Amino acid sequence: MKPRELKKLPEGTTLEQMEEIFLDRLANLIVMDLDYQYEQKLKAKDNEKKEEPKI
Image 1 (cartoon, rainbow, N blue to C red):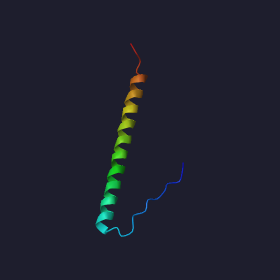
Image 2 (image 1 turned 45 degrees about the horizontal axis):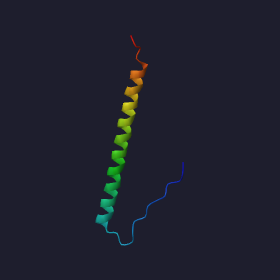
Image 3 (image 1 turned 90 degrees about the horizontal axis):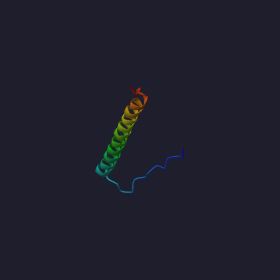
Image 4 (image 1 turned 60 degrees about the horizontal axis):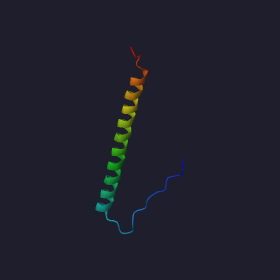
């Protein structure tokens, strides 16, 4: 795993801009987590179908 590069805010960023940047990044993380959970759910369903005995 490569080390993560920290993003730095530009000089002179206002508090409001910092809050907006933070909320955008937080929203992106939430969406990525939900996408990941959904993919895992689909994989689990797919694996269950494969394990069902065919009659």
